[in-house]
Amino acid sequence: MKKLLFLSILLTVPAEARQIVLDISDRDIAIVENYVLDAEQWIKEAWAGQVNKRSSQMIDEEIRKSIENQEAIPAGEAAIIDKALSRPDYKSRQQREEIAK
Image (cartoon, rainbow, N blue to C red; front, side, top):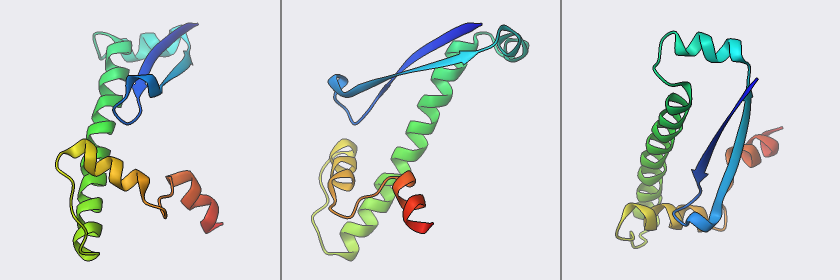
């Protein structure tokens, strides 16, 4: 069993990085590497793709909220994301799911 390790950067401060370890069987690695050159690199790129997609989505949502509430929109993508995450009513997907139950 191989362990693939990669770091995800939360917000923009490396001191707030979380380490995520995945246990992936050699068989599963072989299956994926039948189609991609490097399974670990593919995982890193898939993660980066999700971060990029979700960042854009979060930025769009925060700009819309700021316009609706006639609030200033910060300069720069990181500042817009920080504003969205610091809203008093901000809830993660998990928190929203728990409320919906």
